[in-house]
Structure formats: C-alpha cells, structure tokens
Length: 328
Image (tube, rainbow, N blue to C red; front, side, top):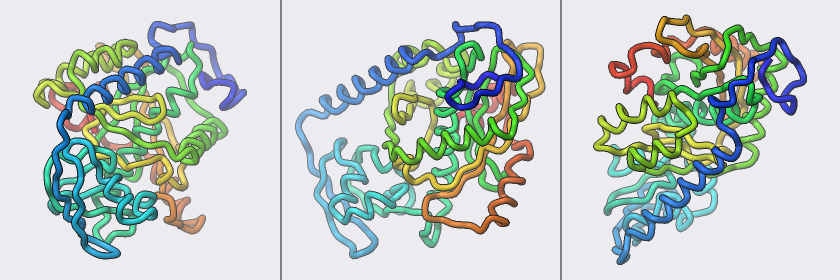
C-alpha cells in the first residue's frame, strides 16, 4: 500500500520510486505562496475604493449594507448581520440567480441571500458541498500517499448528488491498488481532521501562465490547463484550502468546518486505454453537512450506495469533448 505510515502501517505492495510525479511539500508551499502573492496583487490593483449597495434579504431582517467594490465579500456582509451567519452560511446567492462563494469579492451592487443546508431550497448549497467534498478528498489524498506512490491528482467530475457519491480521480505510478477497510477508514479520519481545522476555502482567478507555474509539478494538470483557459477567456479558477490548490469552476462552501460525518467508501480502478501513462483510480465517498444527522441504519444505506462505481465521465475519456464534466 502507498499510504504514509502516519495514516496506516499496512503495506500491500511496493511502488518503484517515481518522485518526478509527486508533489513535494516544498512545491505545495510554493504553489500556495504564488496564490497569496497573486491574491495580494489583485487586491492592490483595486486602487481607489468604490462603494456598492448590497441589499441583504433574509433573517433576522432585510437590510442594506454599503460595502467596497471588488474587496468586500458575502462573508464580510455576514459579519454585519450576525456571527452565526458567518459560521453557518455555505454559499451566497446574488440577485436571486447567481451562486457566489462566500469569500469571493463582490463586483457590483446587488441583492444578497445567504444559503445554508436547511434552507427551503438547499440544492445550490448541496451541489457546492458535494463539489467541495471532492476538492477536500484531493487534499487528503495528496497528504496521505508516500512519495514513491507517484500520486497525481487528475480531476473531479461536476457534482451530481443523485449518483450517491462525491469523487476524485487520481493517477498512481503502478496499478494494483486495492485499499483495505482499515485504509479507507484512515482516509475518512483524515477528512474529519480537515473539517475540525475549520479552514477557509479561497477562490482566485489566475492567468494561464500563473496556473501553469502553480501546477508545474503535475503533467496531468498542465495538459488540462490550456483547454480550460480557452473556454474561460484565458482565465483559470483555482481554489485553496491550507496549502492545497486545485482547479474548479466552483462555487464551493466557505469553510471545511461545514463538513460533518464523512466516509471514504470505495476505490475503483479505471480501465486502462493505450494512451494512459499511469494507473488511474476513482476514489469515492459520502458525507453530511455539519449539524445534519441520520441514524446509523440510514447512513449505512448511503455508505453502501457510495461504494458503487460513480457513472460520471472517467478521467481517460476524451478531455476536449468532456471538459465541462471533468472540471467541476
């Protein structure tokens, strides 16, 4: 097995060293530093501060807030409304039709609603939650594998709650990975640890060139970036949690603290095609938002369902034709 000893002491087989394909802690830190530098550059570029009018609609009462264009976020608005709204709001909705990250700067005057998982219409928050679970799964997989495993994060498909599982597709240096129940449980524990840190989830739009620098250690990402940039006017949307970065269209929930119960339930080997240079796997899980509880039997039904192969587009299917499905 390729997981680090800090996650599990079991070893099912040995990988040959393939460090070229592995994101080292140094490179991970460098990518995060590039994110911070660009984030600061974009804030400084704002220049003269312009005011915008944000009409908040919701409890405890509708109100109008005067905020800063391209600097203030829905999270900042929530601070004015009440601490619990900062803590429990998963997503913002602008002008009743545009989902918006809680920590993404507001660009113009608008109406604002704060969405959570108990809203009358929770589907937008639920999709953002599912997408975020895939993103966080990538973070703990990146952390948990030994360097000799040659782990490369590939991508994750757009969220579809009806499938019963969130997904992250990965590549390893060798085929034959069949995790034990204990190893899957260890990955689940890592997800919970990440949730307990209550880390902010940040979004940043970057240029093609900067994205290539951020993901210079991952040839799979480098292959994907030009196509993504071409469909988004030369821009790439990158998310960060801790020092982990990945590409996603978003939106995502505001913090890891909104993740409740979580199970990484299955790993499926992706059938190899001639063009594949690595062994590909689909890692699947199921989770509940914090504060949402199910009895043991009902949650067990969800766990069993999450073990079945998720039918989303596989990572080795034609990338150009399935870009929308492969970059969630």
